[in-house]
Length: 451
Image (tube, rainbow, N blue to C red; front, side, top):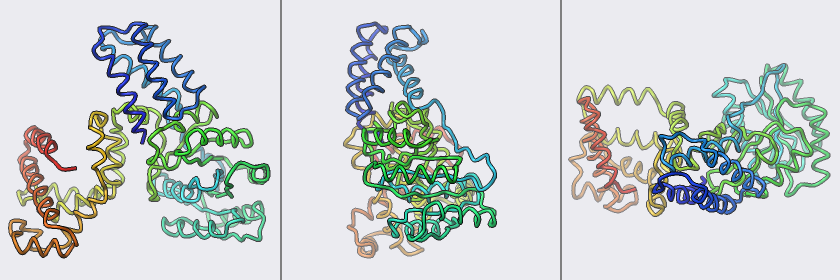
């Protein structure tokens, strides 16, 4: 996410590092490059103009600490303005009303609206402990109703039936009565999408909104459509009293123009951001964390939250106790770590959130392939229980048998064994409590590790 923008901004701000102080000349030169970077990222022109004016004013006004270098000072100013542009802080859903709280989802066809309904439902169920119901009023596409039912069943949400022959308002009114009887806390309503903004669509959703009076009206928009995302968001904002925006497919958006423009153009906050196809790939939108990612400084807080929610703590504790007892780190343990990494979205999902990734060469980043995790797990699965416990047994014909069993070459088996050896040495240092030695070893091993 934001790869192109991160590269361009990092390059522009890096040029200030060799300067003795901030001057009008070097600020103007830097701002010229920042402006081009934002325009290439498909950020709306009025947003770019306002951003450049604000950053220039703060930098020229010496709104920086004397202890900072010019490069650090400018990064601080740019980060603060990026945060201000995107909305200062995360704005959570307002569900303070008599249950069920109605959340109306609007958006164009193809934006991922139905999938986002399931993602939001799962988020509310797991993080907020809400009893969530979902219903589709997309009477034009029976397949959309069926899709929502399948997704709801997968994540454990209450699905309310609807028929293509019914009117949207009738569907929701009937569902509301049922939801009250079943003590549903939140009812998410999936509306019909269109290929473009049209009068009939707006009239229908306006009438629905007036009839059911939702406490939240969220606009779901595809981040990859860039400037078009901003234009459609504005059209919906003019027609409906939106309370927020959900950006989908942000993991595939290397530009970031929609994320940087929508708040400024509509005045409405981005509340969530979709970072993948799975139903757990929905993150609350934190402007400060996104600004850090854009500037290549990572997002450690989000990474910690991912670990908290997606890593099996019981298994992690078992491994820690095993290491402390000096029982060693075998291939079963490596397999478990690979599975945990897969559950967190793989290396590509983590890279955005790791500090310093902006300095990693693009060629190295492009070599990262999360399919390798599945291949590595398949190699270990092809081993016998004895081989996993005692990797030193794996030589010659055993290697060939394992390679044949997982449909890979001998090099894949050798790489797994080498990776295990490297991690085993690290874990021995960890078990002795020598964290400093372990960190030095980790840094050395990372330099030689094949991504």
